[in-house]
Image 1 (cartoon, rainbow, N blue to C red):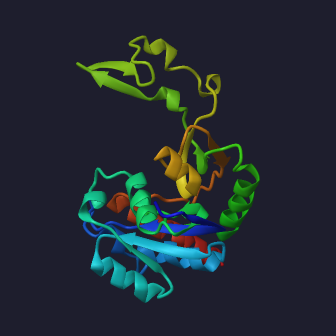
Image 2: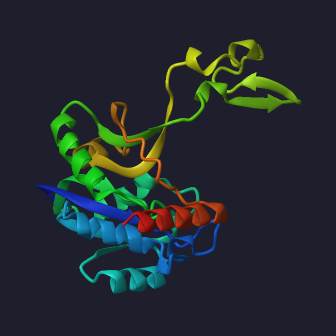
Length: 242
């Protein structure tokens, strides 16, 4: 096996497969630019990353990405790891296996479905990640949920049960919001990974994930037509403030 040389760098990784529930979502125009434009632009503008990698199964997507910035490194992946059920880990694994002579100590995961990012936040969380990375397997950014996740429920045979422990005694569920601990969702602003962890444990996140409380209300994770409209609305508000 080839001995890997690790360099003390962070490489940005932008994965954009062609398949989606929304046709060509990753290159659909948002405020006149293909969706992938925003993650590519932010990655280079931040000046935080030694290398910016664009990963796709589509030659069309790759051509568009290179027109946005010709300094991109391209990772052309196969259909097997570009399906709707393929894991995010499998994409990183493929890149690492095919570029195993020199690798960075860290990867930054920038999903193209998150077009609105704050460069100052990126710089801040990278600095924090370097301080804590010895104790944690990765860093993910969080937003507090507006309502406790404990209120979530499921339905079986028309009967409601608590989603967390399948308990049909929902009296335990519908209590005042203040009764519960705060809960959060991953906002996918940016994820930071350790390459050694990915190789050794064959996953991205591990069991000791550092949760950085971001609470950026402008973060949008685009999956539907409504999300596109909301992103345009947020962008228009930001433009008016400038």
